[in-house]
Length: 313
Image (cartoon, rainbow, N blue to C red; front, side, top):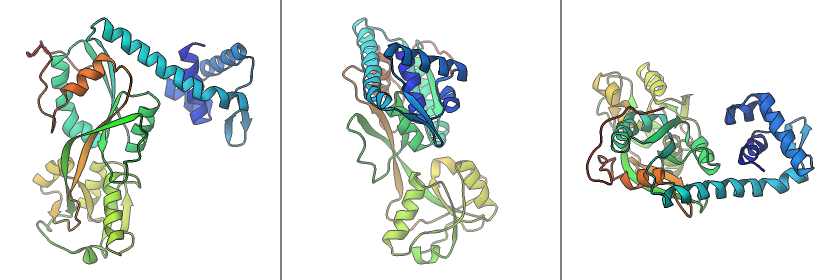
């Protein structure tokens, strides 16, 4: 069984849809169908059944799934072991990050890493926390950068996590409220613009209000982009709790104002998350070793910087 066929099989099992699976593995729908048929022919069993809800795994497909996952992990580790034994510093890295982190913190650091290790190709993928963790678990990305949640300690034991920075959170308001102070009871009467449920900022607001016995915050709107949230706040839609690094420019321009946040948690840990392996790929090992506290400048293993090269997407 070729790993390519197993990867396609797992994509269909996950999405329960050939079209969505094709988008995930970057293939035409016809190619996905052909690969599933080839795998079924090789195994002599039907792996999927069509239902009103989509494609469902048959008993044979359910039996194959854990072996397919293990097979791909083993192939990944074998490749990493060979690269490590040969002393390679080349390779590729697929890095996932929240949009805020990618723009404000990671892009500059990755440029330095790229200058230090020009033989490593990098791809940067932007997604929400839940999507990043899913992609990491399935091997679509090598490492993820996101904000930690206080209730996220139940991560799969195959996943490693390290805090690399603490980012200050601020309560932003429409212009004219700079430095204003308000207790939680008063804030309970105001409207908030928040990220979707599951995001760390939304989680902190919900938890703070719940612990104070104030129920849920009143929502004016939900938005998936910090820029969109800042724009809604600037227009008077409500207040928002966000990382200061994401709205620093808007604060300097006076587009939004900064209020005092009365919650006990006033910073969010920025964490780097990756899968544990018996042998880490050399490129990922270099990135993990180079990542210092608070995104310190990269120092290459040889102790000196190499010629600059453009960051490949």
